[in-house]
Image (cartoon, rainbow, N blue to C red; front, side, top):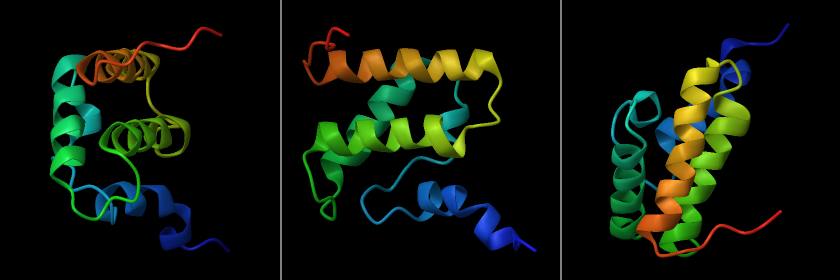
Length: 98
């Protein structure tokens, strides 16, 4: 039997990240610019992160979309994908071509 703790390890990571102190409910917000700004602010103010601010912020957002947000409605996934583009813009990074 899987315990609730093991089942929700991704929630634990996003809530108790050792790298970033996230605003409560940041991944539920509807405004991609607000999400990106919050992640940027958290990453820039963190003294515990192991990589650069952009990489830390993008990693947390990607982690949530890929793991913690696997049951997200498509509309919220779309908001979070737009937040990735906004995060790149706020850090002055160009999106890589696929």
